[in-house]
Length: 318
Image (tube, rainbow, N blue to C red; front, side, top):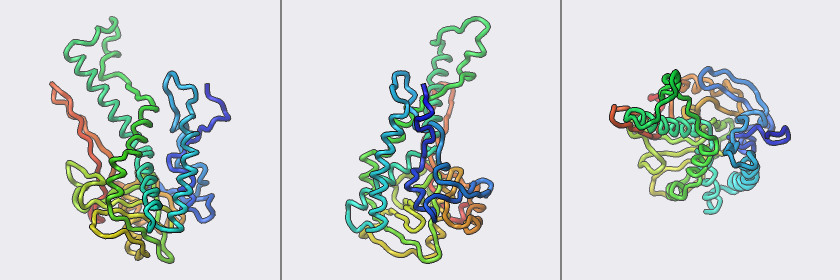
């Protein structure tokens, strides 16, 4: 049973994070990637989906237990982020704390959840099709043959399973070790410039592999990972054998990082600036896809599923 007092509006981007892109810490502009339409919104109302973190297992006592636990974790993350924004990344614990936030933020968004849902759904359907073709499924009742054919079934994956995979990937020690091994640069926006963020705030960029059949990951040589921490700061990771550093970005660098952020977006871009300031880059990247992708290949005797991550490419690739 669901009660009105329970938290039903679940933010896939934490409100503490979005406040860093707001002038008054309450309102923000949301821009639609596909159409360029934009409107002012209250942070409490955006980057949120009803029951997004619901635990829907049959034996779950509290469907909102995870959302409540996440709210406590976000309190700690907010402190870590604020410390990094003020003190920078010179101290290892600040850098490592913000890397943990980056890893989680990459995986907790709708684009990743949808990818996991489709992937599991495809796996279940492929298994059932293999059984159907080999005659190993029980015969359906007479008159329901077509309705119960595997091709016609609506396969739904429980929400808790998608959440379990998302947050397990987001807290993977292997991934965190890869991120920690990369060179970190903290960029501060120059006067008159602002960083933007999106509903996929962590960007993977590669100059050539955006068109590769194999995709790329954080550990791929040549990959750059960028994550806007606020409208005034952005963290960039790369594989250069150089010390971690902090510096003021040029206006050209801010524009390039914003282009990557917009290209990475699934549906929405968020900014504290007037939306017109990023209208051109939104228009040029409106149909660019980046992120997790999987393809199902049915060769008759077996099914193959190919997973890869498509990074953002250079501006001319848009």
